[in-house]
Each structure stands twice: as structure tokens, then as C-alpha cells.
Image (cartoon, rainbow, N blue to C red; front, top):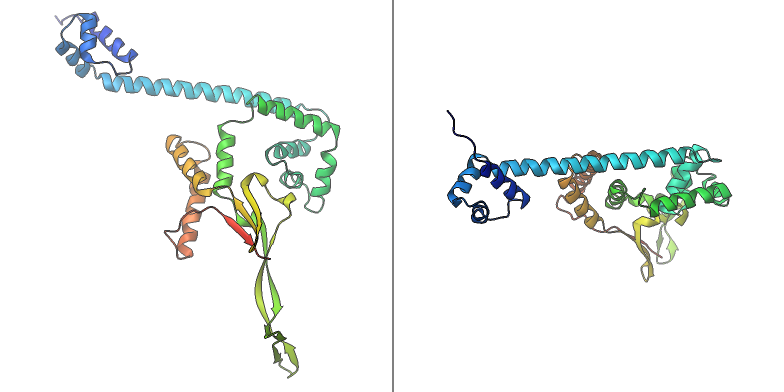
Length: 288
């Protein structure tokens, strides 16, 4: 007949689990009035370490599920109230949601699908409509109540900083400029023998209008002897934050996009002949 299991054995594990495994076995033995060797044997035979690990994982999973359920409930409520907002169509609501992120009227209108030819005027008109103003105030109240600012928003903002594209801030065009030597134009002959001015190909960079930039990605704009300089938010810090975040949250829905963008950066470094290059902070200079 098998020996009856001691109730102190289960009690010992309960005490150890209550202290997250940080209590000494001799202290458990003292509380129960049993030899320390018995507690040590119970720990080994019952695999306390594995059990408490499973316990913590289940607890963490439960908390994650609760948070996901809470967030889904909140998002459903917000989506329902946004859909029911009177006096606005879906495109106007999209404009408001984008405006709350950038506070840039033209850029928000472009994101909402308005034509580039009229986006600026459309934004100016909409921002003066009472219905739009009321809806923006409502969205700001939700933000203050922490209903819109969640982990997804933080990850998405970090992604925007980490993978900001220079073409979002400047237009680069190719122009043909006349070639001068000692202040005089260089002349050559065409196929018919007629004199023409020699030209050369020149890349020209122009900053986009501020109405088309996402100001949240810019940390500095300055004017110096070398011209105007735009410095974007620190890409390296954003990449480090994202790397740490995805290490802790490997199943996050943004992970695939993050990995693809990182691969693109590495491929670009290799094609540029600089595989060990750093992910420096982006600084755009525009000479005088």
C-alpha cells in the first residue's frame, strides 16, 4: 500500500510559491517543523522550479489576455462612437484622426485621400467647420482619457522615427546648369558647328513645404553658415527601443513590417558598399 502523501509537502510548495521561490528552504522547514532535507527532497521530486515557472507564465498569459480584452472593448467603443459621429463622412473622420497625430492640415488631408491639388484648401476649410472642431475636441478628450494612446500607437510612432525617409522632407530633381570657367560660359559647337553653351547635370534638393511634413519626426530646424538644416528624431534610439520591444513581444503584429524594413536597410548598406555603417540620426542640409 503506497505511503500517504504528507499535507506538509503541499503546504511547503504553497509557501515557496507565495514567496516567488525567494524564501530559503530552511525557513520553510522551520515554519512547518520538519527537517530541511525533507523540504529539499520535496522540491526536487515535485519540480517546484518548473511548476512556479508554469504558474508565472499562466499568470502573465492571463494578464495579457485581460489587457487585450480590455483594449478590444475600449477600441470597439471608440470605433462605435466615431462611426456614430453626426455630420461627418468617413473621409472627414479620417482627416480628424490623422490631424490629431500630426496637427498638420495638408498632410492629414492627403492621408485621408484628398487630392494633392486641393488638400491644403480642403484642410483650411474643414478646420473651420464647427462639426470638425467638435469632433477633434471629442478625440482629444479620448486621448486624455488614455483611450487612444496605447502600446500600438507608441510602436507605430517609433517605427515612423526609425524608418523615416528623406524623400518625405525633400524633393530631389535633376537640372542642367550652364558651365562657367573664370566667370565666362564655356562654349562648344553642336553637330552643325554652331556655338552653344556647355551644360552639366546637377542634382537640386528643395525642402518640401512645412504643410507636407510630419513635424512630429523633426527635432531641430536651424539656419547656419552652411544653409538650413533639418535634424530628425534619433533613429538609433528608436531602433534600439524597437529591438528591445520585439524581443519581449515577438508575436506583435508590427514585427513583420519591422523585420522587412530592417532587411531593406541592411540591403541598402551592402549596395552602398558600407555593410558596417551606423544607423545615424538623419540630418538634411540645404545649402544657401
